Image (cartoon, rainbow, N blue to C red; front, side, top):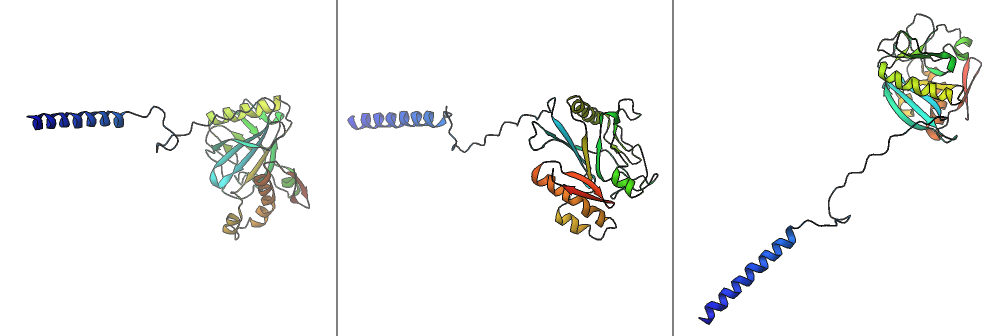
Length: 239
């Protein structure tokens, strides 16, 4: 009888112990530490804001259909605000040389307050300033080369109406904040050495070699270089 009672007590102790253990191990940790094995997603970074008085810089990379809008606060290096997809441009890679070739320009351009067009047939637009000093020195012709809305091009960069609305508003704000000129630098592709080697047999390679120093300077410093025209060629200086 005593043996039976002892066995019953022992069994009850084992059952209670198992229940206690199960309860402890199944409870979620109230304060999981960094090494609990759980992957915690990073909170999203706050969206960048272009403030009144910030300066703008536009960089276009044709082969990637990329329109980049950069901004600088208090003369600090430029930061990328957004990269937009160009809806369309015309004429493929290479510089524009004459009226009617339907080429979208490459090179170093700029827009000013007087080149904004709020009454454009393509919603909103601003002129990129073609022909510039380089184009005129080389006898290149053409006019009314724009960044505009819609998705049709005869030498312009078409961005669609919603995107040009945002870009136009920020360019207009930059002028209102005191910026006199917004640089627009247009490259055929991201001008890494590998890309230059890829296009080394192009008829435009000599021209592209004159663009590369400006691309490299901005990539390194995030500052806009000074560009002059000398002997019918671009001459890139430090910013």
